Image 1 (cartoon, rainbow, N blue to C red):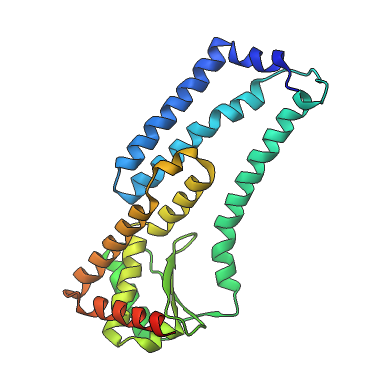
Image 2 (image 1 turned 45 degrees about the vertical axis):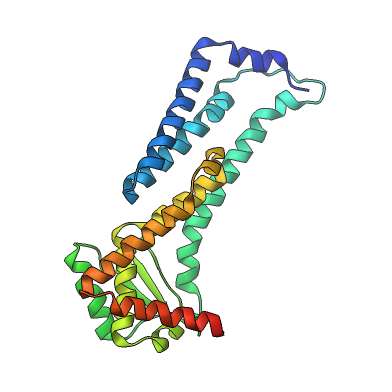
Length: 248
């Protein structure tokens, strides 16, 4: 059973409760602001502000509760380490997922650097126009037409061999521009942050993450269309990928 002195000692302390309630109120405020924010970088910052202020009362309880009484079931004595282990495990899983994803892609035998200097030059020219760090370009050894980007540590764009074989020169350039657009708008970081939000926040049930992803795709599409001055090649690439997925 839970030690009542342990719990009540925290909840009846006006200073501790005031800090905890203020933190939760800020968490709700950051959540509301996050839902209204459209700009990806600010939205991402608000996600982390929301999560920090949401989890802070739990951490605050762990490190300010001085109860040492052992209850009949030993629950009170083990509450702090149990909560600490939970938070450390959650943090470790997030960090490992964040760090291991790009590492696994880099060491995978199915990925390799693109040796096509024309494509590398195209990506470098487009990224330099934005003042961005040049993304490295990588091939994935699969017939399925896929393309994505990663911005952790350094920007990288991945395109499958199937995608490169399926599309024309201009259509492939449209896909590369689309991925540069994602890097420009920090979409991969936002996607990771929304995953973390789903994992850690009960407020995530009130958030339409699909609309966030659709907005990111629209912005990347708009960047590609603006770069080529026409939507023809991007639409052609999407049509071919959809036809491939239907038949294969």
